[in-house]
Image (cartoon, rainbow, N blue to C red; front, side):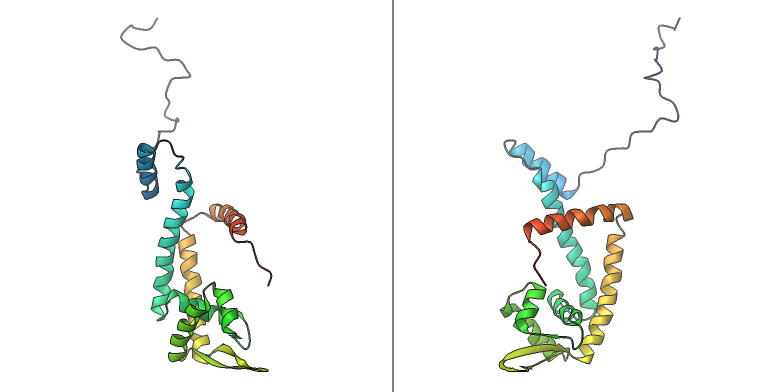
Length: 192
C-alpha cells in the first residue's frame, strides 16, 4: 500500500526518462504579435488571414532586401537587373521591343523608358530602329551588358539558393506547388 505522503502514480501518468520534454514556449514573431493585438482589440473579426498574408508580405520585403544587395554589388537597381535579365533570356541576339520588355518585367512602358535610359547611358544596352518598322524601336544588350548580367545572374542564383536553404528540401518542395497554385488563381498564367 502506498505511503499517504507519496502520491500514487499510474503507468499512464508516470514520467520516464524516455518521455519527450515539452519545448519551452517560443516568442511570437512580428505577425503573430500583430494578430494577437488585433484579436484583443477586434474580437469580432477573423484576423487569421494575417497569418498567411502578413507573413508572405513581410517575407517578400525581407527577401527583396536580400536580393537587392547582389544587384547593388553590380551597380544595378532591382528594375535594371530585371531589364537586363529579360534581354538575356530572349536569347541571341538578346533584344526585345520596349513594349515586350514591359510585359516580361511587369512594369509600365514609362517606367521602362527610364530604366533603358540609364542602362543605355552606362553602355549596357543600345536602342535602334526596328527592322521593317521605322517607327518601332528595339533594345539590345551590349557585350558589356551581357557580361554584367551573366555575372550578376550567377551571383543572384547563389543568393537565392542561400535564402532558400533556410528551408529543408522537403519544405521547399512542398511550398513551391502551393505558391504556384495560389499565384495562378490571383494572376492567371499567360500564353507565351
